[in-house]
Image (cartoon, rainbow, N blue to C red):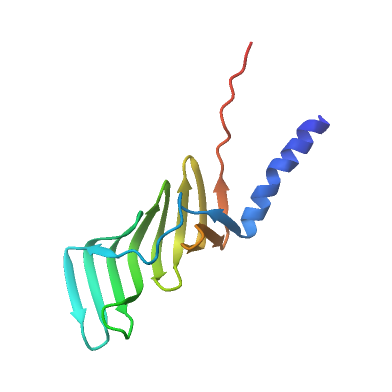
Length: 164
């Protein structure tokens, strides 16, 4: 009975840590933020005055192994012509890197910083495991993510065969 209680308490420790905030691995590899960014969409509207481009309709952005999809993405260019400063994806965003996938209402990708901040009903899936929160910051340089805002996790336990 004592061993069962000890095991139960040991299994609860990760859940209490995740409830306050969690750092998890994201993507099977580090992202190459110097790789070219490819954007496809149904429509494009360019605003030369403020240095932005608005992609709408089935927007898919790729950089190396990473893919980001959303209904709308605003590309903000740096003062140096032709260089992207950041991407602002809205309307329901899906981010895939390696075997990991994340969904949220919004994602802000800072190219130079190599970070993606996802907000609003964030869902991260890693294999059969799932984590949810209100905010997730992905560091593409080291392949980690920090989750906060009522973090919840569902961790699948490996199946073990029982011998009669």
